[in-house]
Length: 338
Ligand code: ADP
Image (cartoon, rainbow, N blue to C red; front, side, top):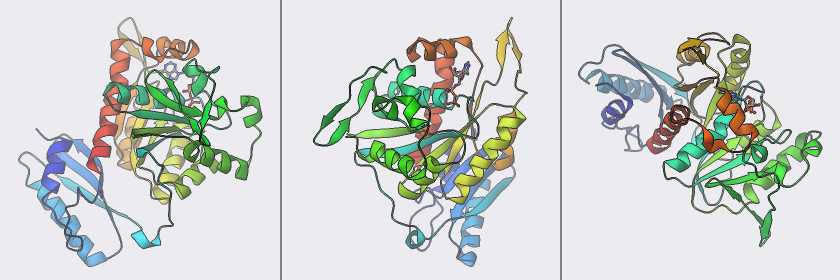
């Protein structure tokens, strides 16, 4: 069977001359797409053209050699040389930092971020959730943690623990209406304080719920912190997808790996049939067009809305929880592959 694991396994045979390491260990293989027998993926490389072309061809040949594989497409994407990048902070006590973003508000970004975090925790990982939606923090409400009292120890905030997650939100510090009027430098400072002023300990996945669009929070995150990757959330509606493409552009221009796209509110089930309220397969088509993985589809379901409103995210049916769990497994494979 052709799957990502098999492909990665074959690519472990391809060694980059300069470093002596294989391309998987180097973390330069991403966006693996399998369509029937055909395989495509991106190879992040610097600009040493002849050596890179050889590396690209070796990757192509290694995957072609897998029994059953048809056409192989390897797209070379550019990577800055290590020395060209400005120094970025690592967040103490955190292994993987994952950003959840969307082009538009109201597409379910916070809901995906929260359920992804919970699913990773269910998979026995230590997970933190940062509500960086500085203008409209919603995580405290979704966790029924609005009244939580923050503890400060040795000058650092202790994360609020809820449903096994270690969470921090601007909403724990101030009234959310005050946050809505913040601008540029204040936002950057607040974000920095949230991430660096909290005592994290042995966190494997830190999930950051960002505000919608491409603004100060994203730029500040990308310029100042080492990010493992980003997840884009969109509904299948064309209007939402136009904005999701802008998010894709922002991440690719600033060299943040895109883990994949989540199609939220994909369909509504009525009388055992699917109704495509926001159009059919929009995000799926976009993922194919951009060569980015479709991490999963989450249906429009009143249970999801209700769970947020009553602050109990664990009340979802097995099927819905399973949809989020599949996304979490893909995110974990991505992190493992680095
Ligand atoms: P965003 O972070 O993109 O602004 P939210 O996660 O806050 O979006 O979701 C917006 C609203 O839609 C919330 O009321 C939420 O409960 C609801 N919602 C999100 N995803 C779904 C879904 N798949 N089915 C039903 N309601 C959803």
